[in-house]
Image (cartoon, rainbow, N blue to C red; front, top):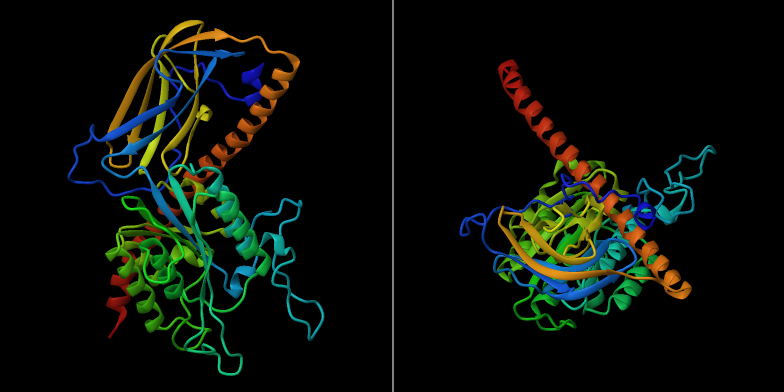
Length: 438
């Protein structure tokens, strides 16, 4: 009954486990596949007695690819420009209504940007950040938040002042995720405004992650440094008119990314909106110069599930199998987090069970660990049963996140195929256009 409440089937020896982390990472030529992945099971310990009411044993631990660090300093950089007030395409606030842009039926009245501000692009960015926090291990990950936009003078259409501040440190690096979450909520309450100064956002994140002069964060030596950059547009500041993307704006943003690369920071950019699949120059170059990735998100609201699929640890998959029974944990019974942490439930029988947990890295490397546990059934009192049911409900919420990540995998495949189709069509059109020229 317990397992049926989850709605999953775990007695499927041929089942394969979902690859939670969807962001591809280039292979490291210095390592041969089959080596360099470390798997640590923190609970249960080898030889431990595990008691549960069902024939399932909980596991927890983390996987580490190669010599990469197990600690991470992550700066979430959020676009709060005026255009993020537009609809995200999903019901972010869960009120049963999906916000949309509507035109006015009365002459002289401006159209409505968004019929439900709670479903805005900014709301989706904030929801994505909150979901990301829920999956990270504060013992190994610090997170900070930067917002960026850029105020413009309505009379001139240009930046109001050369000395104005276009990026704000909402939260310095911290493992207190409750405070980071509060900072994200404050960004949403303040709302969208202004233009898009990408350079300012990257430079402020760089200052905090590198611990430069004026930084309020305390980055850790040896920790991998990552910027997750969310934007729905192209850079329109600090040069020229705020209404257009100037070559100088692009170069300023890319130069900031180059500085980040010098500091050992990886920049992953998520482009939100239909124009994102056109692979805008600034966003794609910012990611590529740091060795990071550009991910187009056609429907901005999909960032809520997509962001949780990013992998800091470059671990693609974790598989748990009971060697004694010859049965694997089901696809929905392994939850892999961006920092390499995992939680799983593996089928067991009363008595001694030998368990193997294996991990697959993005470059094809693999690693595994084996251990034994003794399992006994547990009879629960009414109070204990209630506590167990609460735990099941929490687990069900986690499984919903796993399902969202399944959709994320398919979404990325579709976007990659669409981009490839566009490239092929353009390459086929080009010769014909050239032949038609006199």
